[in-house]
Image 1 (cartoon, rainbow, N blue to C red):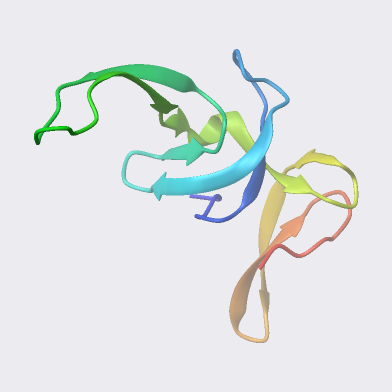
Image 2: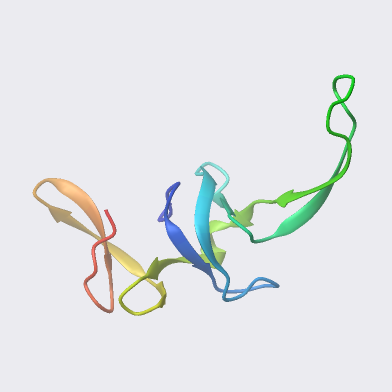
Length: 102
């Protein structure tokens, strides 16, 4: 998967198209990510303890990783990436500006 936890990404399709946020959590096996402030859903939750949080709770839901691109600060937009081996390490590199993300 081309996205990791902590990456700054831009959503490229759907209701939140154009939204820029940080990846809170990544699920590589399902190829999904949770982006801060995007894909807000409502979860109906019972209180698990007396005085605990209950009711309708809004929170970020997982998005497919193919719906996001790494965000380039140089170009101020999402960019596609390729993987290069530099000094024996795999590094993600922008295809447009050769900006390194690792």
